[in-house]
Image 1 (cartoon, rainbow, N blue to C red):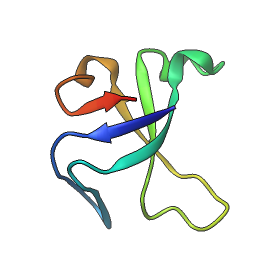
Image 2 (image 1 turned 90 degrees about the horizontal axis):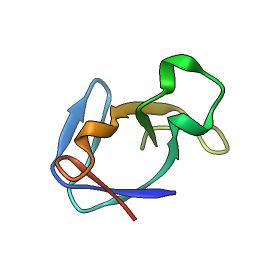
Image 3 (image 1 turned 30 degrees about the vertical axis):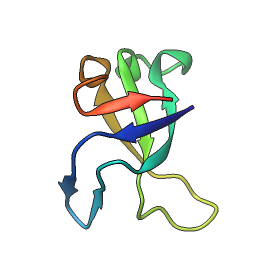
Image 4 (image 1 turned 135 degrees about the vertical axis):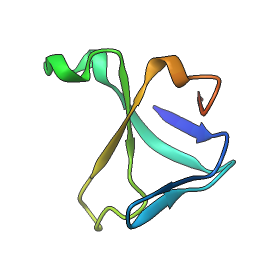
Length: 68
C-alpha cells in the first residue's frame, strides 16, 4: 500500500512532504492490538533496508493522508 501526504508534517528529526508518496501498511492486518485503526507510514529517515514506521489514525485518511 502507498499513501500520499496532503500537507507537510514536521516530526523530530524528519518530516513528511506534501504531495509525496510513502510506503504504508494497514495496522488492522497485523496481529498487534495497538495498531488496530491505524495506518503505518514508513519514515523517510529509515536506514536502507530497514523500515521505521509512524502511525496515523485511519480517521486522518482524506484529511492528512490519502491511500493510493
